[in-house]
Image 1 (cartoon, rainbow, N blue to C red):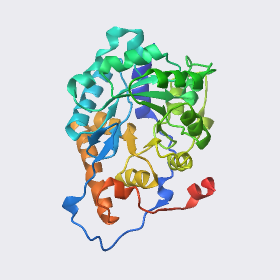
Image 2: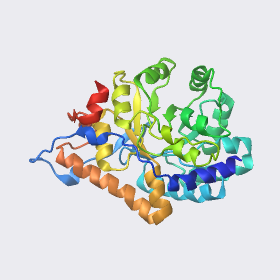
Image 3: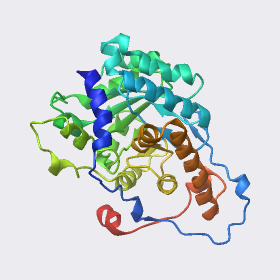
Image 4: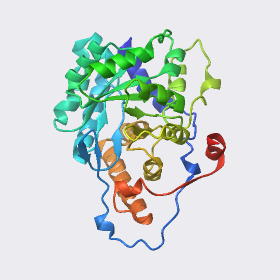
Length: 337
């Protein structure tokens, strides 16, 4: 069942059509007409999980556990290696339950032996399963994903989440690698971020509304439920980022994801306080519809255009980008007040 579900997720993502805004259009950055610097000296590199990467973007969790996923993960891992950016695999639960399906995950480390590879499991996994997931791909970190809305729409999804916070705390305390708690498209609120911080979580991927819509993706798999009215559920990414930043915790690393498709959205995320950005849906679109070279060029161009934006803001590195002032307008301003 898990194998077919993984395949259906990919197919239904390509079929999904409902569009939510991540509200980054309501973040305003002011142009600097006299940028007194050399474009060739713009430095987009940053440090993530103790490693230097080419720019603040990672390929986020996509898939794994079937034949299609094997080819996808191999291509994505090659891109991550070539461009020196991090990559996360999809949920490894399927390979823990059926070890013979682990090749589509192991290929990522095989292709990219020295890169930043991040494992992935649901928040109800056990500490022992978390350790297996890390060992499977020699992961630099582990994503623990929160997908409450997805599970509730999924026919075979989990219904009992009692003790989930305590379970996350056990995982954080038992692992020797960083834990990234990640939503899957409905966002993290300030309240939720504080609860996670209080149990020791120091890396949060907000994964807000505006990107892959797993409520719709699961609804397309479920003939007995019309969940159309829930497609707009969630916290838009820009609002989620503002809320989590309200905690004002210097040791909390925030990853901005949820419809991150453009260099402007990356720049705005960094300006607003994120340490890293991540995307999956748009990368998959380019890969499956255009092939490896198209996906590679898409991400290369994200980096190049980010450098252009940095030049237009008169900043020479990512640290300076994080100090640029910004204004919020429109619906984002209304929701954040």
